[in-house]
Length: 87
View (spheres, rainbow, N blue to C red):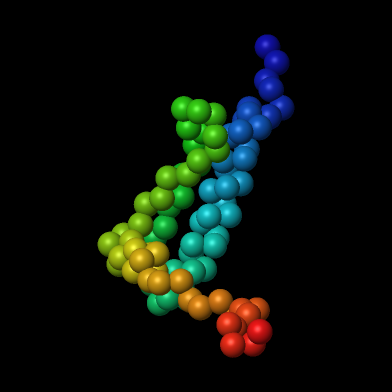
């Protein structure tokens, strides 16, 4: 009986890498916003074959993330915006 050298498919490997990246970035972001919480990011391949993740956050972390997602976008860099009166 031979054991495969890599039991994960390419899509599964992509999902694992995605979960790792999401975990690292989200944990860093939450820490910068003063939220210390357990964060679980689970990789999986969805029904269409796409690498995906599931997030599990506690209430304070979820509310902080929701507040940030519903804030208006910050203004763009004024140096890159051409003013109408500058024509």
